[in-house]
Image (cartoon, rainbow, N blue to C red; front, side):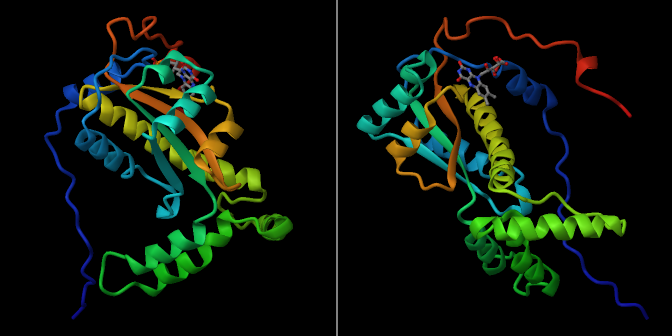
Length: 249
Ligand SMILES: Cc1cc2nc3c(=O)[nH]c(=O)nc-3n(C[C@H](O)[C@H](O)[C@H](O)COP(=O)(O)O)c2cc1C
């Protein structure tokens, strides 16, 4: 008799309203002017919670969303955003930060909060070693070590995963994942009838100083959010020929 291992099963919900999903995606625009209507805090919280459900590398969740509500700090962030309309008129300003300083902490939480009473040894092992994949170490010692070992491994036709060889790679790793949460956030806002503008037109040192960020916290964008003003969208949305961007190979 074969004893089959019981696997976790999560059925894919069906009957999702695609037309409404399309409406959310297609009606999202970069809004540069907002009304004075505030975003109710429970709605903002729900949007932030949906942002946190974004897929993320190894479930390490390398992000922080600073919702800037202190009036003095907000004024400084508006200034840092070059005083853009989208920042100046926004009901809420959210600084989206990718971070590489909590990799160990997040790996430990993945072990501690694994959603089954017994953590499979493979998962434990994964979270013991995975931090090394995204860390570069003091004087880039880990990064350089990986550079050599990955090169050698590939000469033996061994496939190696994406890794961080330099602090810039680590920053890219965290930024990639954080941007996905940013998209969730703006789509969630749209679904609740609010709008947003992603901004990378900001003075990074001023943002870091205003929020007291450490050197491994990287603001990747500031999101201005609020209710779209009647003249809040400056021109119709346009994209180039899809053949420029989609290749079926
Ligand atoms: C990473 C990123 C940074 C952006 N920075 C700014 C910005 O600083 N100011 C601004 O007005 N729009 C900014 N935008 C908005 C883009 O200009 C806008 O998404 C693009 O023109 C397409 O328009 P749509 O968002 O309405 O489709 C940014 C968008 C992204 C994704």
